[in-house]
Length: 291
Image (cartoon, rainbow, N blue to C red; front, top):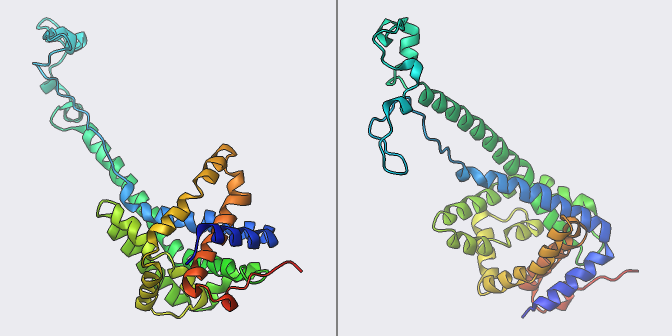
């Protein structure tokens, strides 16, 4: 049975032995992988809330004191109905002007609708591009970073491990991680909490693919589900144990996260995967030392 202390000690030990490369890979994982996945998952977060303007003046509109305003307080003096004024009536204005100023035509509403429609189209295009980049470029990169961290538990891992997902089981990796995010998103529609639970249930999928990239979709889900059975809450507490470091990272404008917290956390999560897979089989979890 694993403990938080053991995982964090092992993660820190291996991180320090291969410091700069691990910092670089953790930065890639944080900026590219997490960034693009969050952008692609933000599709349901855009709403267009606007109140169309109206040129119609309400006759019985009380002010804050409950007193009805005078007609001259609402209608500008230049448009007051003075029979001696040489001003033309609305019906006598040219058709183009009278049509524009007609209170029923609602020009403000039409303009706002056009702006909202254009903004929605732009957003959907950007979202589609972000999803395509995430699916075809970032998913294999995510598996590659996980492979680096797992490898670094046993030997000095090389940066080239990041490209592993592009050369091994590319299509299967893309398909599996796409369904992982799709299922997580659908579960999040049920008041968020089920989505969080499922995200922990699917947590080991990229690690499984990092070691066995041709693992079928259903089997990858089943293996991750089996590994996290009874460990979801403990993994959640493991994540919470980094909250102090996260606060310090905010105080340093993220510098501490780049050079210490993110790689430390990533190596600890890799150690969690191996603890779940191999348990106490020491021959499979040998910790490498600096020569």
